[in-house]
Length: 559
Image 1 (cartoon, helix red, strand yellow):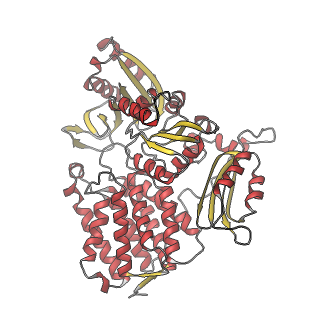
Image 2: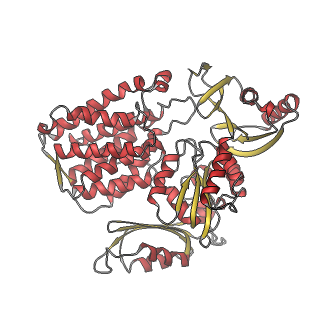
Image 3: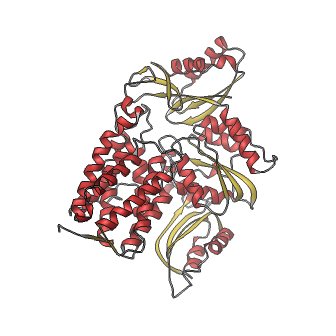
């Protein structure tokens, strides 16, 4: 059907599925647009997982009105947001949902105004908006299509024009952002947004939408049942998750207390998380008696979905499989305790590094970091687990900070303090200086930030492509030495790179060097670094951590 003048809830839902499906299909292309030549190009994956969080909620929204579907999509995306582009994307859709609130259908004018609200929310979510990014692409597209007397357009001509303006803006991003021009790429977040709108247009044109969950990881994984046999002892309990539709015949839906639900669940389990969106309650708990959860919750409504998994099987999965689970690596989390004044939530990948953070006093270590950014919901669950008046958060990655902040804005049971650590070294230094005896949370935070500010973190990683950055010629498969995203050197071997990097960072003037070994460093390479330090910098004390992290072969922390 062509020449539509309005969009209703049913069509809007199909368009959103089309957008998510097209982004999923092209996620790797978006990933490949990473500016820095290390394997950190996860923008496409972050944006898709953010969209997927929204679609999960959308598919559970039985109501057909446009406004209700927009709200469900936005709420799911806010919780599922990962990485900077994912957070910005979630805010675009949140603003869109605000513009469509209460509507059963919308015309081109109303849609255009709602998209402008989305841009406003996205810009407001970024402390220092940078042009030449997804923000620019979203803003210029709606501004330029609005200038074309778009109120007279059909829905089809509006979206086709909107997409074309978006593509033009995307092509201009390297002229606005020097790092894009230097790397010879367009903005990855903007490209992801273009693929979403392209998918909306395809669905609008009646193209069949691929099932976006068929290969997204939502399908049930094959379980090795031999890991819990007739002689096994139930040790970890059951990971129990459900979506409950509150029923007016059973409870006062508006007055339903999530806090009372949480209080009950804490008497029969731990790792409790519960949220209410409209008439749907989303809930997660670890318990030895899942039947009690089902019995209690059915007093208030009926189930939309129920998932109960034996956590002993989860616990024994391989490292790659475990990191995908909500209840990942229980050994890295302190048991939930009584309410206390302060707690620390941090982020790390690599079993050794995560163990180190726990030993240093972190109450909850979220699995994540480079190439595996945690979602806002991961942070919310961590905040609930630590159960403190003030929660200090160390994201330890520049692409994780916005998701942590978004989670902090959503969480109301604690005062959330985001300490903007951009790398593991800063997080390590901040943890090392935590002193709860200081006079209040402001003083504690100030000391952590002061310690972090004096820390230099060097990183060694293999290059995934040839380029030239900061005057350094980088060869594909060479080993780069850098601090954050400032390129310092490139060598043919990883040990050559780490030795040169130590010198470049001025280790000669220091007394103490912390070396965090990555997953791919062997004993011979470790010994080569030790010999280099002993021969060239005998007065520097070297402390070694078997971090086990991916991507970075070496992390050098100089305080």
